[in-house]
Length: 202
Image (cartoon, rainbow, N blue to C red):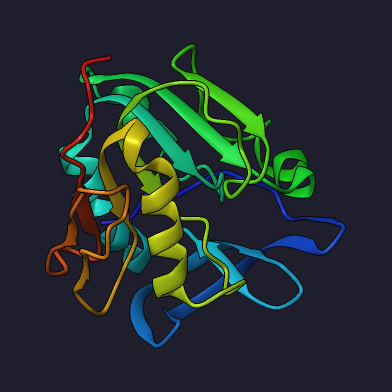
């Protein structure tokens, strides 16, 4: 399955969006088609491929309530979140104004959505959430460190934390928030999740 976006080609600062016609991407076979790809100067950040859908599939199947999303990307998952009656609200934190300028006007959204221009590492958290979906990593630090930092910062504010594709189990037992124990279970459909056990009722 694939969620195809409708974002025009554009360049803004260090970021660009291109339409790429191919039958493979990032080493994975794809149906021959034209895909929309978001790049920065160093990385392919996101594309609307079947592989990308698989990496989001478990999150989209289990999502509910108030959702926090790290990174706007191509806005690929906005429509499924809009269509899901179990989703109450979606808060997206996007660091780069260039990405917002190229994507936000063209991606699906409704009154459930709010977009905040801020850094997910530094954002002053203003709400409690049912699920945090962390898909903003672009190699700025080791991925395992990114996950640990996100769990430490957002664990008290999210009932569940999920990350895109991970290759290894991680056990966060090292006194993160004192008595908390965060366990990342085995990969399922390209996503891993952390259940936080200390969240009080919102």
